[in-house]
Length: 324
Image (cartoon, rainbow, N blue to C red; front, top):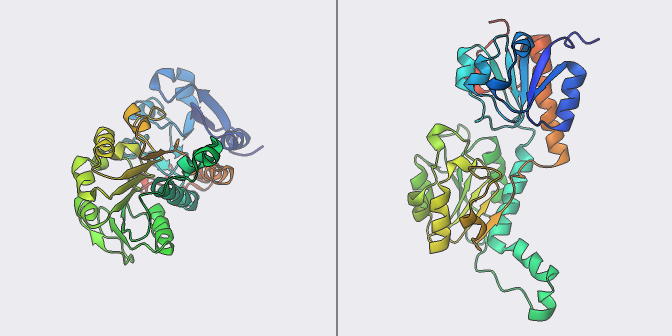
């Protein structure tokens, strides 16, 4: 029997099937319906030492588990985990970077092409028999030719998107909290400055208090009437009401969105926008990539309890040590 088999790992809500099977194989799995402190029984509180979650973990849940040592987040974004609170409790938090970088970057370019060239609408035209009945699909008013791209959030995924944009012949600029060492793309100290300089803005920004509704009416106005906005990061970074109005009024030309503020609920105003291409948060949604994410999620748990270190700690808990 594995020496980790007696360690109880809490899985709140849904989790990738492969991750669940690996947790079951390596540990003792404990399941609750959702990540809520109200569902933590005294028995769970006395035994659980780790969490594997794609649903997050707030301060209340962390406080309800006095023996908790690690929260293994399934996903690169961990805004649903209170990592700062975890750090004060000496609880390690990990995520799953790198393994989904290329998949998400691929999706970003596909979404950009869908948005600019109206490919889903053109396919529907064919499937509905309109090519036969009405002739060719109308020429698209937008193109990638001659565009200038800006990336909001130049991390791993942002860099992967930038490489793809260069291959498409688009110059790239970016805005980040600070300049990224070793990156030669022009840097803008503010998001507004970036939006004024480009006509294609791709957001890969994480969901944090500082990025909440960062893409607002002013930013969209700066992007301009030929502007295209693509969001592959987090829905919370966008003022969706302002975006819907900008699409409706012609403040910008089009938008492509894979993420939303209140998933899976999408504002009706965006659903009704003919110049918006919408996807149901599928950026990393391939069997290959989700399996790799699941493995990294569980590998963090195994490493923590066997080698006393995490594979991919998040910055807020990078200094947390086992047994601290």
